[in-house]
Every structure is written in C-alpha cells, then in structure tokens.
Amino acid sequence: MPSPPASLTSIAQTVEARLIALLNEEEARWAALDGELRSPLAAIRQLVGAGGKRLRPAFCYWGFVGLGGSPEDQAWIDAGAAFELLHAFALFHDDVMDGSSTRRGERTTHLTYADRHLEGNWTGEARRFGEGVAILVGDLAFVYADQLLHDAPVVARRLWTELRIELNIGQYLDILGTARSERSRQVASRIARFKSAKYTIERPLHLGAMLADPSAEAILPALSAYGLPLGDAFQMRDDVLGAFGDETVTGKPVGDDLREGKPTPLLAIAHERATAAQLAVLNRVGRPNLDDRDIACVQQVLVDTGALAELESQIDTLTVQAIDALESVDLDGRARRALEELARFVAWRSA
Image (cartoon, rainbow, N blue to C red; front, side, top):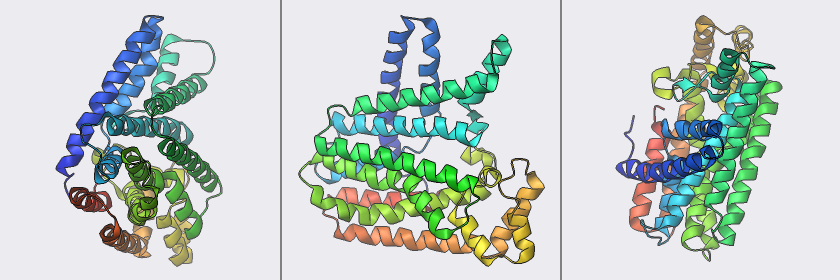
C-alpha cells in the first residue's frame, strides 16, 4: 500500500490549523452567551481533528496551484477548511442515517449525546435527542463551510453550490437504494459517483482552479477527465474497505456496509454472478444483526464470485485512465506530478 504523499501531510496541517482557529474562536464567542454552547463546537472540532485523509483540501490545493495560485494564498486554505467542514456535515448526518456506532475510532456524536440524555435522566427519548443534536451539529458545520467561501469569486461559488446539491442528491439515492436492496450495477455506480466520487476529487479540483483563475472555465472538462475516473476508483476502494477493511485502520467496524446493505458495485457484481446458494448468503446483507460468521460468509462469496477481483481490476483501469488524462491538462508541472502521486495513493490506500 502506498504511503501518503508528503505534500498531503503539509496541506492537512495547514488546513487543520485554520479549522481549529475558527472553531476555537466560535466556541469562545458562543460560550460567552451560554456555557452549554461549547458542546456543539467541541463536537465539530473533535471530528475534524480526529484524523481523516484531507483529500478534498489536497485536490483543491493542486487545482489552485496548478493554475498559478500561490501556496501562501488564504483562498485555498479557507476552501480546504470549507471542504473539511462540509465533509464533517456529511459524516454527522451519515452516522445518524446509517445508525453507525463509531467514526474514526470514536463513539458517534448521536450516541454520545444519547448517553448524556440517559445519564442526566432528562425528559423525552434519548435516541431522538441524540440524533437531533447530531443533525444540528452537522448543520452548523455546513454553515461554517459556507462562511469560509463567502468572498470567493462568483464562478467558484456556483461550483460550490453545485457540489453541495450533488452530495445531497447522492445521499438521497444511497438511502433509497439501501431501502430497496438495490443491486443494479448501473444504479450502484450512479450512487457512488454522486455521493462521493464527484465531491471528493472532481469538484475540489474545479473549485481550486476557479479560485486561482475565474476566467479559466475551459480547463474544467480536462480536470474532469482525471477527476471522475479517479473519483470512481476512490469510492470503489471505499467499498472494498467497507467490506474487508481492518477496523483498527479504517476506524469503523468490519462489515458495517454489509450490515447496512449499501448498494455498491461490489455487491452488484456478486449478485450478477452468484449461484442460487451464493445468492442465499448475499440475501443476508442488510440485516443489522449480522454476526462475524455471517460477515465472513458474505466476504467469501464476494471473493468466490470474482466480484472482488473484478472491482480491483476496475480500480486499476480507472486509476491508469486518470493518470493518463493528466497529459492533456494544462497545469504547472509540479501539480501534475503531485496529482499523479495522489492518484496512486487514493486508489491503493488501506484506510
């Protein structure tokens, strides 16, 4: 597995410093009104400070620098922080929608607040309180993300709006597909693209480029030729990690995606190829009470049907396609090399 590029660490540190400064300032401001208001800001700070790959800020940075932006410019730093807060918004809401118990190795926010409700013997239902607070904390992160891009050029703001719409459309398709036990390869691929692929790579690249040069919209299709296949490969790798990943590395229980019945290309391929006996095993997917033995049986079917091998092959093909597309993008040479390195990391990472 490739190590994170050195530039990724530097970008992550710069963006994290901006995030922590903003959240500390806001926590102090609201705590002066009521000490209880420290809590939601602290929840955002804990999530954004608990790890994460910072890929979206990195792709935004290289889109920015690649079109002539200065590495010292505050514009990309604010945009990178906005992407992290937008991602935090999605994770807070995701964990409620999916009923997840851990995130980045920590207890999820909605369960933490439900615990507080129970410990305090407060009025009402602990579950609803915890989920309600987590949704509001996510909304708060969403607003701060917007605030950071308030002064961005119009074309960049337009891109920001579009990527947020795409993200929410993808989330809806994901919920719908899960509820319907969707196993169509075409539908699963569409969900993956809109829920994650576009807003992880393509749109951050676009936004960085437009922050550097708002008149350079003609370059966006060339950036998409790199960003879309790599975004698809990114989400496919996520699907593999969701089914087979090491909990100590990913920060989420092994097989959580299988318990939730997520409509992934991996499951779609397995369903296409499965025998009657294998289908009986795959039909257990989506049951929240799947134990470790059940998960192991499903994993074996994913291997035996060739679904895992096919998806790995697709990841390789898409990654090569993305890297080849860089030859046609008019970018600074340093940015092109960095994007090639990021592509390899994104496709073959272990977390």
